[in-house]
Length: 430
Ligand SMILES: [Zn+2]
Image (cartoon, rainbow, N blue to C red):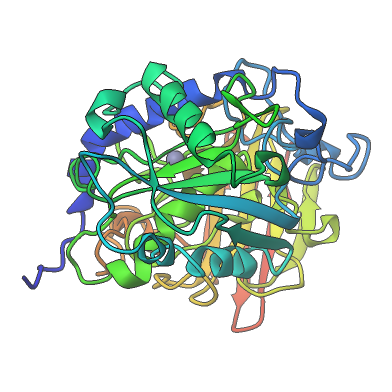
């Protein structure tokens, strides 16, 4: 059936599910950063952890002084998977007696690969060499029926999930050395559980070393993908894999940017906000956090005064990418240039994107908020499942962002194919 262009078609239905997904993520991450980690998982964390607080970037390395489960702070808490270099992703396809895998398990694998690997290569400018590996190239049959695990909206590592992970480990153990992988993807047969349009069950348990163990090591960074994120718009074959880079984003320590109200805080500017529909990239803040931007590509605007900066499109490798204006020890404004290229295929108004990052706000509660340069415009996209209102949130030459209370002004002076020029004025300092 030919679907009508259905902006927002996902949102209301997914909304119902979002609460539970967010809750899952929260609970999942409840031990993030607090646990003792096995040597294999203490590899240098995601992000520019080598930076010291005394560097020029110190004031921009915001952190949390509250108990947050997953924070936007830099550096990322330990316990998550390293996000640079070669990362080996154990990928297993599982099925159940009451939901037997339909056809070849490799077809399920091909819904996500090589697309997920390519997505990360593009987004990271080649800094993340993501290697999916499938030592068991067939359906791994679980000893219990799907129904018996009781996976609906349960809390993570609730008895059902603990059992499922234990069973995956015991069924795969003869063929799989779990120690040799950096993260685990479990691609569940799509006929198990409800359609993603009704309930999104896909979930990641990240940074949790209370997880069940395999080969002496906790299965602490594992993404489960259920069902198919198929909205009937005909784009599934091209865009359906995007749930996996989203879930793996959690494995690398990134929080959810959608909230109980859906994608209204960040829109389609980050895959941690919207992973349905047209392709999108990470925000520059996330790329810095993941270690994909060099210090030299980030300017920390901490002092009082007025200064001009050049920014180049985020999708292109090299050049200055991110300005950060710290407001206090846990929050600040980020400024970057987004254009329609690379992973960003839905950008309909190229320009300067400005958003507030708050490391004290937890995953799913709105840790990042994009400022809309054209409030109540209705947006410039007609693409399905792209948050419309924020699609034209960017600032164009001649426009300025002003926060009087904080004494911050960002004026876009000029913009073109190659670069944008902005002037940041602060009447306060950090
Ligand atoms: Zn998520």
